Every structure is written in C-alpha cells, then in structure tokens.
Image 1: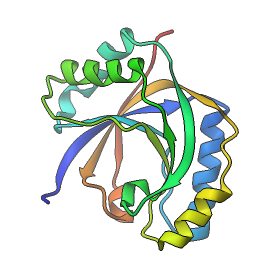
Image 2 (image 1 turned 135 degrees about the horizontal axis):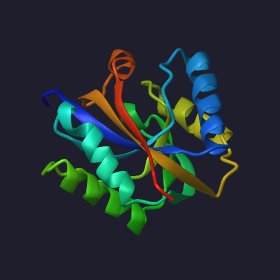
Image 3 (image 1 turned 90 degrees about the vertical axis):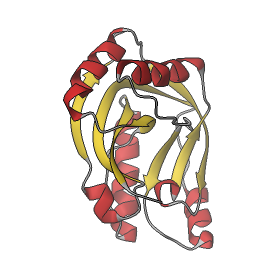
Length: 176
C-alpha cells in the first residue's frame, strides 16, 4: 500500500475525560516505550489541502454542537493505530460532522468512520494487548467532544516516527 500525506480531522474530548485519557496514554506509553499523543477520535481523513483547513474547520464548527459519544468497551487489535483503544457507538451527529468536513473540504475521499479513541500505538503480542485492555476501566459512560483539529500526517500511520511527525494545522472550538 502506498503511503501519502493526508489531513486527519479529529474531535477532542472535554474535561475531565481529556485529562483522564491523556494520563492513561502517557502512562502506557512510558511503560511500553511507545509514543505519546493527544486523545482524539478521527472523524475524517482526506486529501492534503493544507491551505484550506482553517476555512474547513470554521465552517464545520459553526454548524456543529458538542458531540457526545457512548463508550462501549476497551479493546485491542493487531492494527498499529488500534493497538489499544476505547470503542464508541456511532451516532447521527458524528456522521453529520464527517459529511460536513467532506463537503467543506470538497473532498471525495471515502473514510469509514469507526469512532474509537486510541490509548496506545505499538506492535505487541495479542496476550499482552488483551491483558492491558482488561486492566483499563473507563470511568465515563459517555464522553463529550468540544473541538475539532486538522492534523497533517502520513497514511497509513505505521510507526512511532509517523506518530511523532503529526502536526496540528488548525484547531476550532465547536459552537454550543
């Protein structure tokens, strides 16, 4: 699969969930020698249109209220970007944000939204991933998200260096 530069659009959790997830990410990263990163849910990944991201975020945020997602479970997978993650239920508002970003960015990229918040990016044995997933108890049945970010990154993200190369291009609070 070819790798390319893309813009990932994220939603970022509000407090106290933001600090909770950041602490979990930092702790696990330190224990497993993995990269740290900001807690987020990816809503869309599209073309590298660096010069238009401010306008895209402003337009989408104007029409969008805070997003609340229901936390389902902590899980793991062999996929680098989903080593350990909190899975959320899909809802209509999240789907609308995805569609609004695609429309505002005039981006025809197909991105299948699968709402999850990663806690670790690292290649690990399945036994270790499952043990780690079972050790984490998310104290929030629902998590609110109140800002959008546009992040320039390499797709697919496959290594620590890829994660550490992420660059936030723009941030916009959702209006509510």
